Length: 134
Image (tube, rainbow, N blue to C red; front, side, top):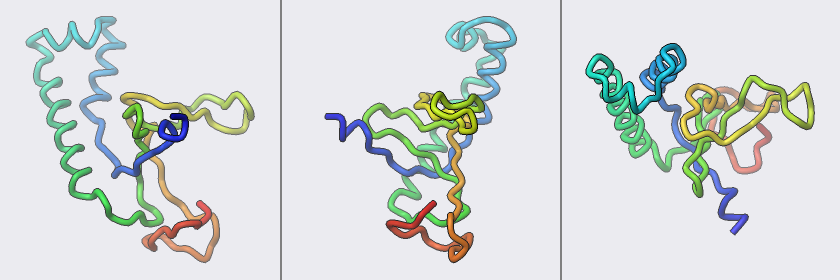
């Protein structure tokens, strides 16, 4: 079972503008997202978030199976839980010089990972090959 929990799928960078606005609104007014969704004054924002989710799902369907290229921004989705890998601003437990990596249900931009080559022999736009150091 452990091995199946450690499988990630590569996804195209998703947009989280409406979700980010909702999180900011929840923090500023001190009410839950469910309470705000029921409020007619905020209904449009929640409709925007739903459209955003649909657009992200459609983009995934369009790009599934395509190759990954250097310079591309991706997201890693855990196949078992559906959560996304996110890099936080907080320090890692093991090393204070590293960032903490978590699995988040709705991480926003913290889940955006840019694929950069570790070696100078690779350039942006080139296909990432199996075994390439990143």
